[in-house]
Length: 220
Image (cartoon, rainbow, N blue to C red; front, side, top):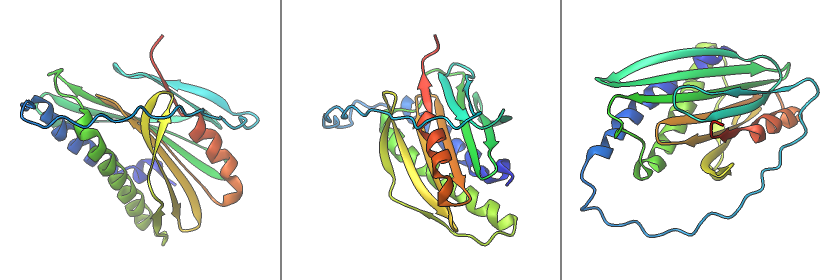
């Protein structure tokens, strides 16, 4: 599969991201205070054994953090830059790799704005998360249609997960009979995500190894 085609929903979603970020400049004094929420429970991340011959790769762009993943082979990296509006760019780094039976795609996405006050606030992060998955799913479905593949994408219920101290989202889905999983973390100016799907349920160990290795850490 041509993964660049599958991710056609990225840029559209990120344009919405940048537009939504302008809410940061609005006066928030009149907004009611959010009800304090209890701290999330500590989650122990159990990383499955790395398949033989696979390696850990690290990625860092712009002012973001380090994204690391276990992958079966040296990944391909494609970069797309979009000017959303004056002074605001979105740079998408598409990282892809595959094994004989599974496909893995990661995204490292930067919101580059001259005005440093433009960022993704906690108030808009939740809605943005929903939009991001929606456009990604739409992009995958459209890509399959273009390639003549008649397979419906069926998602399960989205989950909230902790990724090394950062709150993120996780979504299981099925493309025809191919099981997949998506995980993402949205920061103030960056989005980090990984997506995997396999030809059958027998390869879920490969999917789990990549998804569970998804790590975001500060630059040392």
